[in-house]
Image 1: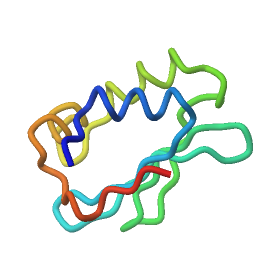
Image 2: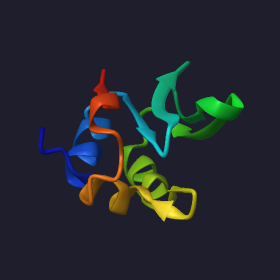
Image 3: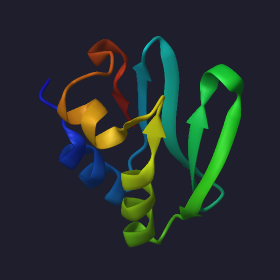
Length: 89
C-alpha cells in the first residue's frame, strides 16, 4: 500500500483515525468525546490535540509531532512505520 504523509492528513481531515507501529511501539491519532488525541500505547499516554472540528489546528499539530525525534512526515513518506500495523478507521 502506498500511504504517505499527505494521505495521513487527508484521512484525518475526513475524520478518520490512524493507528500504526514505529520501532515496535504502537501509536494512534484518534477522536473521542469531540476531541483529537495522540496515543502512545506503550506508556498508556493520551495527549489531547484539538477539538474534532478544528481541522486546520489538527493539521498544524500533526505536523509538529515527532516520535523518537522523527517527525510523522518522515515516518510516513519514508515508510519507516510497520506497514502491517497501519489501520485507517
